[in-house]
Image 1 (cartoon, rainbow, N blue to C red):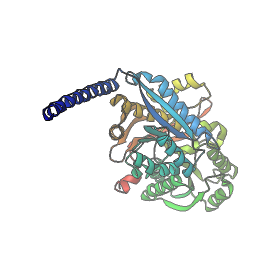
Image 2 (image 1 turned 60 degrees about the vertical axis):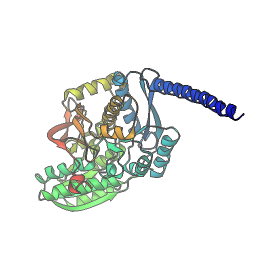
Image 3 (image 1 turned 180 degrees about the vertical axis):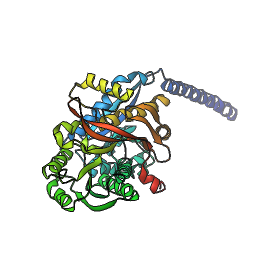
Image 4 (image 1 turned 30 degrees about the vertical axis):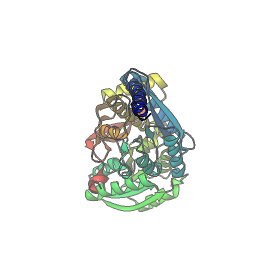
Length: 413
């Protein structure tokens, strides 16, 4: 009995071992099949969080145009069998708590592998801890406060910072004017713009004789501009969001006769956004801005971009900085997808995005500074002129390879 028991155990053990080997072999084969590039289509899920409703609904539409046009014209740049699915959500404007909740839903429920869009700096700052915890790369198409990429190692920005515009414009203005007044919208990007212009202007020997911050929502510019007129500076520097607020500001500047009083008007490029110039009329003529993009820029890639836009959306639709940023951001995202054959690893994605560059963006050469994960590009000093019967931002000076001045001054903390 003992002998039978002794010899029986190995037989049962051998059977179990054979079964285990068979299961392991089948599992390995299944895993190999799943991992095979030709086995099935890989789908990369991207969460697009932008503003599609409220007073700034145009921003979402502009981003969508750039994103969709890029995807349509560059589908052949994805690896074979790889698809991109974009899940779009509306944040309704600069509402940080709402933006954070939507981002959490995109990450947890929709299981997006990359977040993008992000119009507003307060929203970006609210989302930053989430993408850090979840390890989801966030590719910013607009939000411009300088500190944003420092708030998470999973953020890269393809748009701009207000320091990139306002610091060089301050230096430019100091060569022409002595006394400046500043008017900015009261939120993070406005504060950056105010500080950067003052830095450049005072370094160049200019004097800031007054400054005011106006409410972001429904501002009445007349009383603020009356203060400017009473102070009689040589120049007014302004930053407000592009769109209706910029047009209201321009019309108030004209109505109060600041130009007739000898007060020139300069600012960040969003005060003369090309899509708003027709609404502004002659009040915008002669206004000088610093910006990284104008549809009128005389570059082959920009002309191709404009032509594609016209073919897709018609003669009346102008590519904007939102459209441009969406185009460039999707090019960076497609680069990361391509280099990983559609299998998105968060840290590998960030490594690829952090060294992204494109010498032929519509804006000119564009790259990411790997130390800050922020954009590097040309800035253009532009003046509103009438060209062919149409108001246009004409580039009159190029400042190449501009980094974010705030990070330079703050030792890239």
